[in-house]
Amino acid sequence: ESDYKKYLLEHYTFLNRPVFIINNKIYIGNSQKNIKEVQIVLENE
Image (cartoon, rainbow, N blue to C red):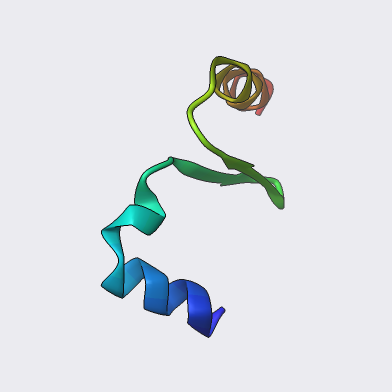
């Protein structure tokens, strides 16, 4: 966890891709497939 905090604070490139944490599942990236999965999960909330 401390490594993630360090990268978030020091390296903007760590955030090049969106990160979603929904129901303890992590979705990383903005690929069409990934965004569709996030949309489906959010619609079913």
